[in-house]
Each structure stands twice: as C-alpha cells, then as structure tokens.
Length: 322
Image (tube, rainbow, N blue to C red):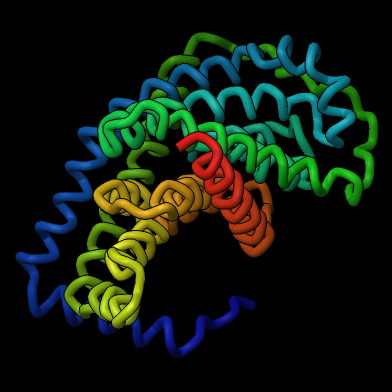
C-alpha cells in the first residue's frame, strides 16, 4: 500500500500551482532560465561523461582499476568496484557517481548493502566546477578554489573513514567482472540511456529554478535576511544567510551569491553547499540511488555530516592560510 503524503506538502504544491497560474510569464521565464543554465553549463560538461563512462562500464574498463584497488577497498570495507566509481565521481562530479552505483547494482555487480556504502563515498563534486566555476569565475581566486576542493574531498573521505570501525566486513565474493557485451548496439544503447539521464538532470534544474522564484516572490529569503540584519549583527550577515539558504536549494546559484559577500564564513559556507549539493542535486542523486534501494534518509544524513565536516575543514584552512 502506498503511503499518503502529508497535508502540508499538498498545500505547498497547490500554493505553488496558484502562483504559476497568477504569474505564468514570470515562472515561464524562471523555468527557461533553468533550462538555459542546464543547456549552457551542465549539458556540455556532463553529457560526454555520461556517454563515455557508460561505454566504459559496458566494456568492463573499470575491472582493471578495481582489481588493483581491491586490497585498499577491503580495508575500507568497500567492494573493489568502489575505487573505479569514486575515481569517476571525483573526476566528473555528481550525479555521475550515483548513476554508476545504480548501474552497477542493476547489472548485479554489487549488492544492495554495497550500493549503500558506495553511495556516500561516490558522491562528490568535480574539480572543473569547484576550481573553474566557483574558484576562478565566481571568487576570482584560484587559491579559494583549491581550498574548497581540498575541504570537499577531505570531508567526504573523512566521514566515510570515521564509520569504517562500525561497519561489518563485506563477504569476500571476489570481483564481479563485467560480462562480455554484444557491441553491435553498444553506442546506441549508451547514448539512449545518457540522453534520458541528462534530460532528467535538466528537468530537476528547471523545476528548482521555478521553486527558487516562488520562494523569492513569497519574500522568504528577504525575511531570513532581515532576521539576521538586526542592530549589532555582523556586517553582511543577512546577505550571507539568504545566499546560504538559496544554495541549500540550488547550489550553483548559492555559490555565486556567496562569492559576492566578504566574511570569514563565506568560503566555509560555500564548502558546505558544494558538499551537500543542495536539494536540486540531492533529488537527482536520489533518483538514481532509489534503483539501488538506498534509503533517502540514510543518504541525506550522511551528506549533512560530510557538509558539516567540509565547513569545519574549510574554516580551519581559511584561518591558517587566508
């Protein structure tokens, strides 16, 4: 039996629908902005990775790396294939890691328990986004990008390592190799799957762009900004809080707004947002991980722990080197 959602989400959805009906042009523009953001920044960066990694996975290219990393992964109580998945996730960024985890589970290369452990390890942003988009383009500071990248990857690994002593060792089932595929339709099948995946990503970005516009029209961000703009409050505190809340919904927008503030917490809060990913990216990841039976509550809780660790590490690095 399907569980019925609560009354509050239904009211919120009807309220959002009412706003769309009252101002269709305004929200159509917000949706189009999301689509343009996807088309200009996300599609060119992720789509080639989706195709190439999909073909590599089908051809079993990750088996060699997994074999070499098997002893290390065993100590981390992870399956050997976690090394390959983490490498691609760290190279190209989310939601690719979650997509690979789901694909491995569907191909019966990993179990549900292994997918659960891999989901939190293979959930990273890519260096192109952190160093290029955030560090160089937004903050106009290469060192800021380097600190963010170091904080982000360190936090993801640190939280996973902290829980290793509490994990049961995985049964030694050996490395499950990718079966030989008929390559006649390999390219077509990979492209078709990649198109569906990248369109899903674009849909999420467009939907959350509309949500951000609605929350802005309801003055919720302005209210948060005013609450933290009381007398004797640190300079720019309200703006920082408003930008941070936007980032918790859509990470790219939040990072861009935070880069315009000048406080000691600006960079650590950016590290938090990048590591968490925001609701937009979380929804994309959970869309894939649901296929691998990974609990949404488990995944989100781990992401918050990793984001908090990234904040602390980044704050320490800022105090030491900036």
